[in-house]
Image 1 (cartoon, rainbow, N blue to C red):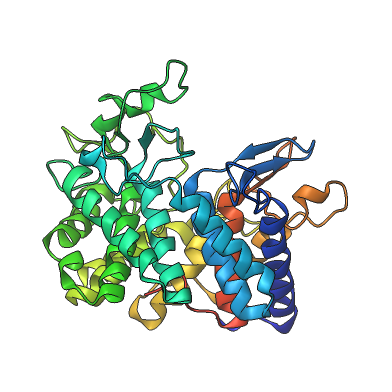
Image 2 (spheres, rainbow, N blue to C red; image 1 turned 30 degrees about the horizontal axis):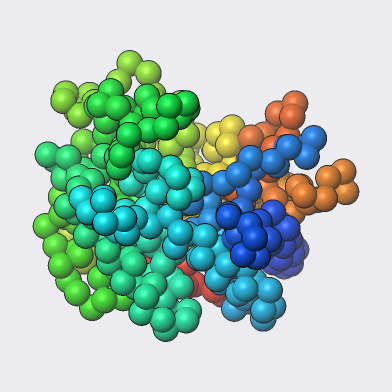
Length: 388
């Protein structure tokens, strides 16, 4: 996209602030801290922070590696490797849990469960750390997680489970209901992003088994059942393939498809089947047709870098009449205006305020990670991450 010079300058400055925001919210890289390298999930305007999940760190790793390439600051590489150390501590190598060997815990080494879609982001970050360092341990860890996914985390349709429990929950676990059978009655739309990891693992290992039958089954299920007539990808009941009465994720994954349409672009690269491109077109046209006057697509701005990224990656392969240069520029402007740049709170400075028009502004790692990767791609030419 050919943005005006003003937006180009603003976009690169915003990326620099974002990379620093992640640095400022990382648990110090020191052996005395059990969660050394972990980042915060969000910071509110009162300075209250919430610790992040593993997938937050995974996208921070990709963003930092991109920032290191763009700005040459060794601090970003150190932070990425430090976060990688935290992520290593979550992988299951317990001889008493051989069934889940290679799986990745959700929050801490004590967490008894995982959302496979989140663990996948970690394994994807392992691939990127391998590409950066050349150290095969990172790639081996990604392969082990991939084996666990295919062997233990897919349902009878070949679609990833919403959650997997490794061992009994601690007595007061707040998440216990989420890892029950009731939670797994839903096939979540966010699982379409699984295609990205399998695609990149295939490239890194030069092994086509990762983009074989399970890969194609996920891609086909995504376009045949998860995508609705509206163009959006929606979670469905596993048994009926119908929409549940209430969206179990409360609109979280709508315009933010959790990189599912990017995954379909990977599927097209593997199969040359244009139905995947048509699915992307249908989704993007739906998103841009619903664009708001202020440039946003919905209440959360997390979707903006996700959508603009797939527009950039797809290029001339897709036809999206609604995604005019003016519409993309308005969306980018809305994203940049969501960055916290006041001096009211040092820990929030540089991050993205995810929910617009909130009484209590909250800077969130999800939208901040996506934004950092996209802005570096668009304005610094760092195309290594979230691509095909």
